[in-house]
Image (cartoon, rainbow, N blue to C red):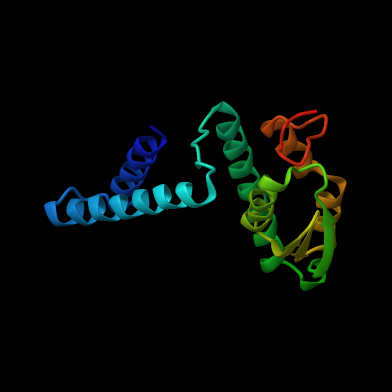
Length: 167
């Protein structure tokens, strides 16, 4: 059943991105989706952990919040770039992500990278190394606002075990 959901999601994504409904492009889309579904099926057989689609309300809330953060950060970075160069203070720091379950570490690191002015450089254990255009951006990450928001959305606001389940 989860393979059918993947096929539907990938097909919708293909049509959304291509924007064309010509037979040749649709055939390429069907072939691409079929290959990806076959790879997903084989991966499920190898690691014995099917990848389920959890497209619930929580992920939508997170994506809306993240989009807002991207817009705010892009505006801030534009002001930095077009303004005085004295506002730019590049910095590199390790940020603790101990409250994020290991299976969500990559999502958190990618969320940092998506916000303009910050870049996840390395992800090791319970720390992500982040480069920022401004030291203030690192301080906001160290305060844990993004970590807290993500923890609330994935259901780990009171802490999670290593599997990502709420305690």
